[in-house]
Image (cartoon, rainbow, N blue to C red; front, side, top):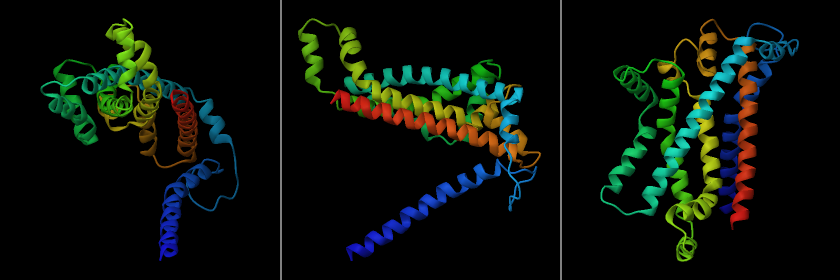
Length: 262
């Protein structure tokens, strides 16, 4: 019976792996097709689509624009999310549950509803569509993820270390900078990478709050309106490889940091 269960679980696992990776593999292969149309069979192969996007000024500019937005929104969300996590985890105060609920709310609201709400709110505040509005919306959306990750890490911090620092004369700020913050580095880095990828891949909020300069997902959407082409696959493949590389590096760095803090 146990062996039968293992076989069933193994089949489910590999079916899920195929479900996830087969479309990605097909997308990558189509980026090498020597034709303007997507479809099988692939009769000849070429690197022209990849060399083309690296020489395309619009694509490179849009990629850099998206990276800048992702970096700035991540910095804001990490700063605010870490502060909220320390506040919620280190202090017991009236309204803590309500504050926690408000903090989580941006992550629970559907993307399209959130984008419409941000658009209306930005118009009410007289914020022009563009980079600033996109960074603002991405940061608000990403704060809950930072807070939850940092709170989970903060809950494992030995209280004796903080108490020892206070007994030695350290004020709350010095104790935070020398004890708490170094302990939170793995969680902050993991949350930062997660927010960075979320912001870079975000389409709905970028579409509703963007100006005349599109982010990379919005540019791909605009290109899709004229039909699929291997150029879109090449752009998507480059973005996939870069995000995967960043994710793998962050995972290894976080694992080493966790080992060092044990």
